[in-house]
Amino acid sequence: MLNRPDTLFAELGTEAIEKGVADPMLSAFFECIMSAQAGEVQSSLKPFLPYLSLCSDRMQEGAPPPIFYVGKESGQRRLFGDDWASPSSPASGLRTPDPVLEQASADGYRKALDGQPYYGYARTQVQVNGENFDVAFERLIVAVRPALTSDLRFCAYLGVIQDLHRRS
Image 1 (cartoon, helix red, strand yellow):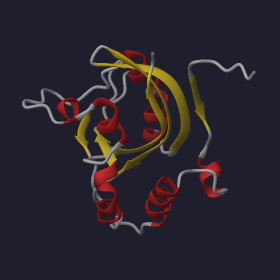
Image 2 (image 1 turned 90 degrees about the vertical axis):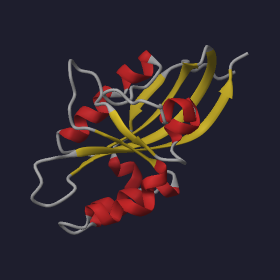
Image 3 (image 1 turned 45 degrees about the horizontal axis):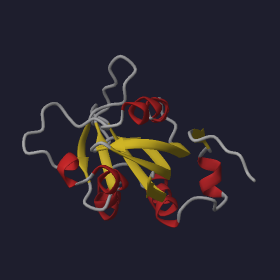
């Protein structure tokens, strides 16, 4: 019998996307962003917005940046639910409700904000509304500027859930 750890966070690198290992939608998003001409990034994001989560570029005390947009078809919305993704009074941005997953994602955001897109795979247990789930997913995080001359940046996160089931 195969013995594997319950939790795994692995950076696969964008070379894996280029070799065809990644999910097709994730690959298409990567290709679209990487091939966008200066000033076209904003328009290249539009077809993917339903699947993306967008975050600020501000990481405080090593934590991932706060999330300010969660697409209607995004992996985060699927995992954490509509109530989490669309709070009636968002305070200072959303945080991943599972603290272990929140902390584990910080390195990917840091790398993206340092100028290198992050592509990785994760398999872990999460707790959502008091219930435990096993989840496996691919994720791509890229930092983008809305306009060529903008000082503002944000992170675009595309996560594709490969497996999700309730723990018994």
